[in-house]
Each structure stands twice: as structure tokens, then as C-alpha cells.
Image 1 (cartoon, rainbow, N blue to C red):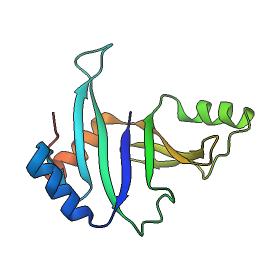
Image 2: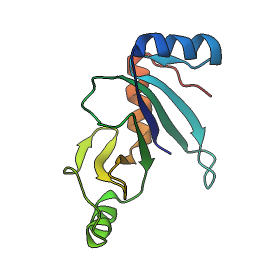
Image 3: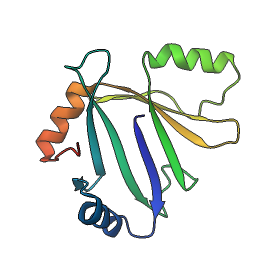
Image 4: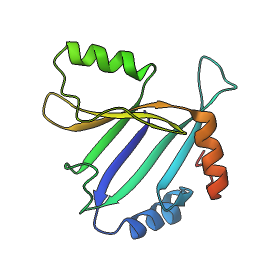
Length: 132
């Protein structure tokens, strides 16, 4: 799981509530959960939790799931061959590659091929703390 994104009336208030009541280390983007990969317990992984304003155009529905994937280009080729709607082109950022697809009911889903080392560096530069 790469992340859970959802819409709400007041993201700042929601972040504060989750920080105060459930102990999430929140920042302007939500909270990042740090974990270690089962196959190699020395490799960290991250899952993003983010409340968005109701008016956000990043996704239309009330929520969007982000899945961590390997080899995004090959997966997109496979999904195309299966007739899956690919919403946009693969975008590359320092912390990974992204693309959006539609599931069988038309829900937008984000696929992320992470670069966890860069994601962690970016978080440290921002002063973000992970929730463990």
C-alpha cells in the first residue's frame, strides 16, 4: 500500500485531530508511515496518509488508493493489453514514478513505483517525522 488519500472539509483540522487523538506525526501533506520490507528487513518502505480539501481536483471521488508497484512501465503495458484505462502519462519525480488508472467501476487509482531512499531524504529535508 502506497497511500490512502481522502477528501474532507478541513484538512488542517483533520490532520490535527489525528495527531492529537491517534498520535500521527502530521505535516502539510498528511502523515507518512514507516515500515520495513519483509524480504529485506534493512530496507524501509513508506505509506502516505493524506487528507485533501473537498474541492481538490487531484481525484474526483471521495478517496483514492495509491498502490506501491515494481516496474511501472511493464505494468502499464500489461494493463493496456488488458483494456484498463490509463488516465495520464507516467510522471517521474525524485521519489518515484506515478501513473493513474481507472478500476472496473471508474475509480481513479494511483500507481507508484517508489524510490524510498529519495522519499526518506525529502522527508528529512522538510523536517517531517514518520509515524511508526
